[in-house]
Structures are given as structure tokens and as C-alpha cells.
Length: 212
Image (cartoon, rainbow, N blue to C red; front, side):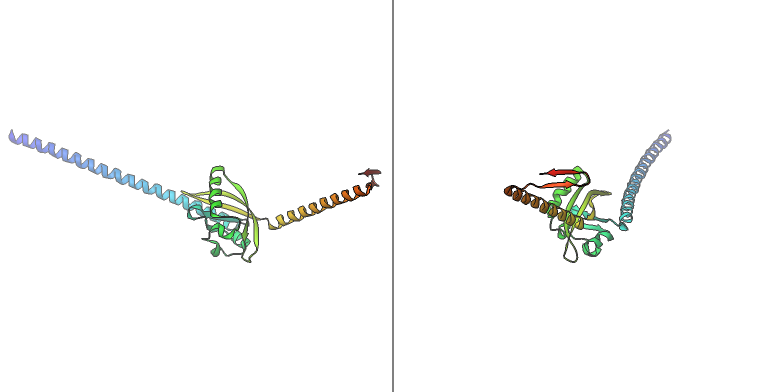
């Protein structure tokens, strides 16, 4: 009887040890599974971010439109500049990469960049006009469309720039011509008024005479 009780006790102890061992193994397996899936998800996240970055670079590298990316977290330094942007500014890509945005523009300051970044994140894409220094020392006036570029967990500043230097110069020329014409008309009105001279136009085609 004593032997029977002892054997039963041993069996119970063995079952308890086996149950504890099974529990430990199940915990280890569960922990390993969790770690495995965390790594898988991290790899997928990294792969997705890398795919997005590569897709973006392929999309804009050969674009005829000037495109740049700056990192606000790194003091608005250029992290990407395509060939069109480098050619537009007359600098090499190597020269531009790593430089602060305001180093190339007399119209921008660190404070203005920070304020613009806050506005961009709150309100969405918005246009900007600013002058930039070219490699030959001249200034280029650019119209820039700014956006927030999301690559993984990063939030970057992306811009597409259009050179409007000639367009702006033509607008100034036309505005000056209009100013001179208006000034001439005002002087003529003063002169004819002082001399009490009437001015008329005769439209031969329509047979109309118009007086001032």
C-alpha cells in the first residue's frame, strides 16, 4: 500500500512537472512568435518606405520640372535635388545637397522657413515666390509649389519650382509702359485744359466723331 501511494505521488509530481514544462515551452513559443511578427512588420514597414522612396526618385529624377526635397528636422537642408533643379540654378547636385534652403535665397530666413512649414502642415499645399542665387551670381525668380512629402515616418518638404524670371520681367515692362501711357494722357489733359483746346477723334470706317 505504501508503495502504491508513493507511485501515485510520483506520477502526480511527474504530471505537474510536465505541465509546468509545457507551459514554459508554450510561453517561449508565444514570445518567439511575437518577436518574429514584430520583425516581419518592421521589415514590411521599412520595405514600404524604401519602395516609396525609390518610386519618388524614379518619378522625379528624369522630370523636366525642377524638384527638390528638404528636411525640416535637419534645419531645412536639401536632401534631394533632381537634375532639372540643379541645371536651373546653375549648380551641381553635389553643391546643393546638404545646404540650407536659405543659403540660396536672399528672400528666406530660418524663421520664415519654420513659419512656412507650420502653415504647410496645417493648411496643405501653397505657392511661394522667392529669388534664388544662381551659380553665375545672378538671381532667379521662382514660383514654387510646396507640399508635405511623407516617406515612412518622415515628414519632408517637397517643392516643384518654375523659373518665372522672364515672365516677371515682361510683366514689369508692361506695367511701366502702362504707367508712362497714363502719365502722358494726364499731361495732355492738363495741357489741353489750360489752353482750352478740344480734342476729337474721327473714326472714318464707322463715320463717328468723338470729342473729349
